[in-house]
Length: 177
Image (cartoon, rainbow, N blue to C red; front, side, top):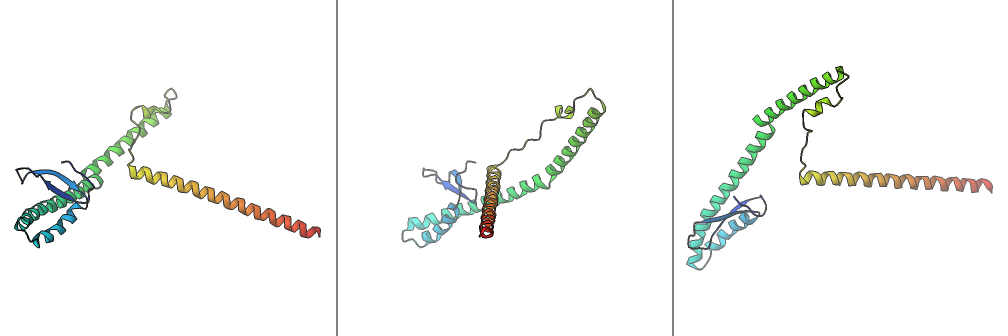
């Protein structure tokens, strides 16, 4: 389903055409919370046509709340499957098997001088993982913080050296008097 906005919540937007029950789009963000507040305003409306809309809105909000809960449950289930479920167990066994084969190939290469040292790397692709935008930003921020800390340390050392030089010069001047 197409979505728009953030994934914090879901809102079912209806069409304005002849079929009022036609669902056009599922959108996200704080719109669902805002729509819940509209129920009270429609209930207190002076026009009967607005009060009728309250029933439709309430039904749609129930659907949207159910969709939000279903999405949250599915995300939890998927995360469990990836981190602790069958997929995680399978991936662990694959990595262990890969490492065992790699070690055996490295042992063969070490025993035979004719084989190159990187013999086992020819059998497997390098382990590549794509970093998310958050991970890239965190790495860049850490790199920047480390550089700033190094620069601050260098500045502190330079200031301390200047103080030592000034103290030595002062001692020499006092000794010369």
